[in-house]
View: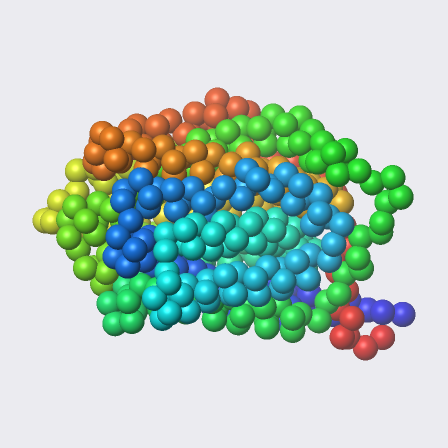
Length: 432
């Protein structure tokens, strides 16, 4: 007879801090997130400062980073549902480390080009698709459905902490080492993440092979589950709209700071890190906020509150408006994190276990598939009507993102529906 290890019970006193495998996942992901925030700043600065890319080329780099969600977003879910999700996580961490590690090697050899940056961005993007789909599908396996809100909140909190320190440290590393060599930090962080994922003891069985499985049919099941649910449709439309215009902003944001305002990498990193303070606050407040206003209202209110913040960016100068930009980023990050914790936990709790990979992949396809278009439009508009005008267009569009969830039944739903709880996964290391 096998008993359940009490450390795997998320709702006991102390929560998931007593869940050994969750701690391993959390430690690896925290350091990986720190490295990723360095690359988020370093990659566009590699293009701007080392390769001397144009505004359009910088926008195209962001397009390459996000194109994978359109190219492999839907089949990735079906493939992940056929595989051990932990193995998917480890393999894609290692592949991202290799791809990013090629940048400093090429720079050292004097061979770095914008073309290589596009290839690296695309490879990292494809790996991120598989990692994220497997990651959001693995968490319910690891902690049980009752631990989802707490697990997502803790992971979002660590992500926010990394975003506070990462850009600041990244900016200093870029100044000292130059942008191409600062990318090494992210490559090493992915190897760190892979090592901690490999240390997880729980080994869920590989999903049984279905004799009549067909990729098209499996993709269709994920699409029908998401598109057939009015609440998921509203969330997908809201998130997709928000991502479209936020990535349009991101595509030219560093061009504004580095080229138009002439800020140093250190200052750019410091400005980029300020918003994460709001993200950390949002991670701690998400559960309380949803309990106070209701789960449905928490989703649309958190998007509505960030709408005015986008209008700060187009008008920022090298004066007191930089402080106003920092405040706007704090509010934006807080709203985004509350929104993500609430809606992602709802999606994970609603979906049958066998469909988790396809549900997450379908949502990623719908909500991140708009990002390549946003990045491309940002680059085109930035190079034609100007960077500030492009940012103003993005702010206007982003202000409307809350409408799909506000006009849905989520507006008044204090409690959101859930799928019936499966038993929490047993820890095989606990003696019988």
